[in-house]
Image (cartoon, rainbow, N blue to C red):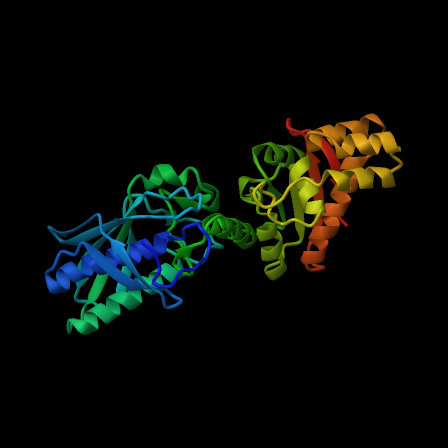
Amino acid sequence: MRPDTPETPGALRYGYTTGACATAASVAAAYRLLAGIELDQVAIVLPRGQRVLFRLAYCRQMELGAEAATVKDAGDDPDVTHGALIFARMELSPLPGVRFHAGPGVGIVTRPGLPIPIGEPAINPTPRRMISEHLTQLGTEHAYHGGFEVTIGVENGAELAQKTLNPRLGIIGGLSILGTTGIVRPFSCSAYIASIQQAIDVARANGLTHIAACTGATSEQTMRARYALADMALIEMGDFAGAVLKHLRRSPMPRLSLAGGFGKISKLAAGHLDLHSRSSSVDLPLLAMEAAALGAEAALQDAIRTANTSQRALALAHAAGLPLGDRVCLMARDRARAILPDTVTVEIWATDREGRPVGHADFA
């Protein structure tokens, strides 16, 4: 499955969001009811106009309606839902309009701050709009004036959701149906970034004024111990520091603690917003230069420049009594402040592999 117009000239394959898959399955199930035909593939139009053909895993009549499914292809993007079976159960209704229900594997919203009201299935606005527009058009083509009861499900979705931020967001029982363009761009991790943004919005909507964005479990435990923050205030940002900072630029919160391993914080200090090794590397010459500014002699500078890891470079500096960790955190804070509005105060923590603080720049 590919868009009619290629989205990338490179070798990496683009994929499709859960929202696009749910739309395809919904259209096929509705077509089975309105036209009486079981399709083996179905075409939909994505929000930006691309016409996409989806192969169906099945399309069949049910006792109370019809059901169709497709297997999600996320392309070359690392995605927890790649290969998942996305299905739609469709019933016709005398009431006009489209109503959405959570099937097995799709979560229910239980907290404010998400774009979907509490109690509703976690099917985001763009997938809802895509499904509604396609069903409305299909109804018009078949002179059907009633409505649709749409149940979206994901096989093993409850288990897959445990690998996402959904439990922390207050989305209970399964995955979210996501997507704003219908297309998953390789290595953009758009679903993960959307979850980060939603986590910040949920924290704000629940009255929190201080959040801690952490690269992983170790730095998260450090922030939890220091501030006794609720789970809702702990934002698992992974390598996407830029996603946190840019979202807070649009939707500020008063206080941000940003924490991660020293190597990743040094990448932020160097100006990188994606901290993954595929996108950025630790700049050892920069660390040597900053150590020199702190008073490191030439031999120490050379040792830092040729160190095998950032942690080794830091250990060399600290053994010489040079606060390289603090200096790098100050640089990272300056990078963050250049993105954040003045209404957001930010501090930076760098930790070692055991979660011990090795650098800090306090709230400015």
